[in-house]
Length: 479
Image 1 (cartoon, rainbow, N blue to C red):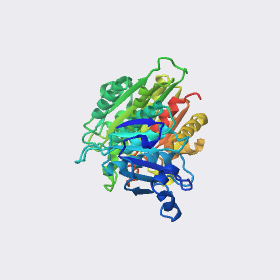
Image 2: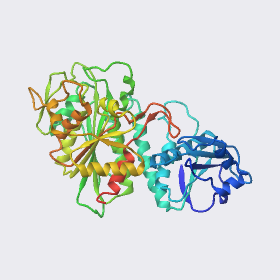
Image 3: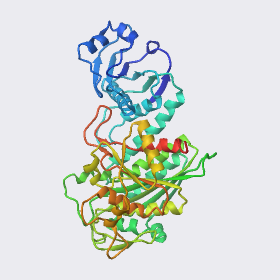
Image 4: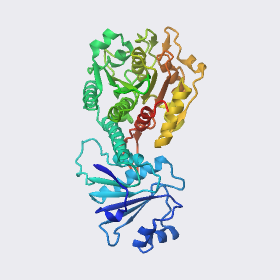
């Protein structure tokens, strides 16, 4: 789908559909309202149009124009970036539903054209190829805004990274084990101009990645660790940012078996790695001034005669011993070795993403991403970039006392607390033991990685959350 910017009037264009995102208290576009005989004002005055976020009013024709469909889209009384992003996706999906080939989006002055481009590409995502689908009809989206064309290009590249993450998360585990995921990551990384290195189970054993190997040893599909690196030609910083993702391609819980209800969703347990792959491939194409690397820790958590048992004590890459209390607390184990390896490769800052705890959904639902870490500046930078693009984060405390629950009796650490108190935070404190003091942030996306119910701008499925924030973090590094 092609996205362009047009700074002139919509009447100059030969388009099938026109979308008008509008705040609740905004005055309708005068020229368009006149063309429609005052209909827009009438809809507002009689209460049929309220401007509530997500509202769509369809007008079938605009007289004396090529426009066959007009979509009046609500963005709320006080629209924020997330509302504009959602409206752009809704516009594209409405145009597709009406079988329109082209749609123009009429934007108020000062609207972030990149954000709208991201939203439009986000809206075109369809589930990943396992049922018959009609061809996607929308071929062109035109943003009616006074912005540079490069902004639309940047938005498109970012959104393609988001949709890559969504596609991968939606692939069932029978088609995406650690080996297949690693192969796909290598292909996508090479296409984005990144350095790529894949570590198989033999290389991981030689490395001493005992925690990652312990998680994968119950499966016939061996684990993988993938490194992807972007090195700028003219760096603006000496920093080296690392993005680390949890890539459990399917999580049965291991011998601590999960209940069957909803287990089919556990293909999404590689969502953190999907997020980081989407972000690093977009970064490779957008070429910011900071060096960025990515580590994807991949394993399948299965019960078998070779699986790690509760009570086993394993040794992580940094030499710390860990008693496995619950084999369903496996994500923190694969991240432990990946975080250690990031520090060994010279990371100056680390951000990891993971569908790590069910507790985060209890605390924050599906609205906000939990943000934890050891460095306020890094956490603040992530939250700021999130606000700019409409992704919401919420900081949780990391008091030293939260680590007490993770200290082992027979080992340095244990992988699960003896009770359910502060589960998201205690998991974060566990991860902190593997960053060796490096400025670090942890994003728990377990509650936000999957959309359970179709929305106006997207269908049910993977959300691609945090990709846009991380891309902006890299682009604005040091600002």
